[in-house]
Image 1 (tube, rainbow, N blue to C red):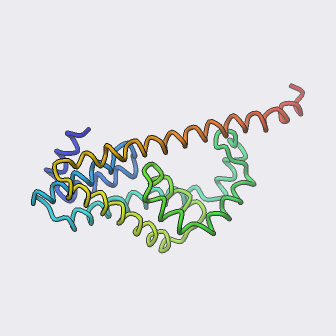
Image 2 (image 1 turned 60 degrees about the vertical axis):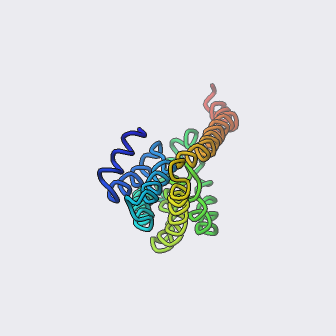
Length: 209
């Protein structure tokens, strides 16, 4: 993957940066922690402009965020409640909990989107509830833009400063990303187990099983 990313950055220039950052948001295994520092390194060599590198990363990242925002809009709170009623065990969500999450997101959506865009793994996920729970597009764009500019700017700037050692950025951030993903998986498994122990038995008893 590293060689393919490097080749695309060299051949496609700023468009390649934008395309990779879009794919990073849609398909998270493509790491922004490698793309933007590498692009910053190319700026340090004089092959690219650092402000344009950051702008390209921002555009691609925001397009990816909008993709998931509109996926969330398509789902909507009502459809999510229906899914929770039918598949609550695997969503680890009850219909009544959707309303509680909706109320929480109404109060904290700005902070959730801004800080969410700064966290590996969470960066992609945070756009979905913003769409599901009806965060207005202007507010989403504003707070998502703030977080995205900060994220892409810091990564590109570190690559610019570190130059040939830009891979250290990914080396430090990858463990953080792995911890976050691991915590999400563990939490999900825990909630599934708790759901089964707390919800399935009463239901089974009512059916005489």
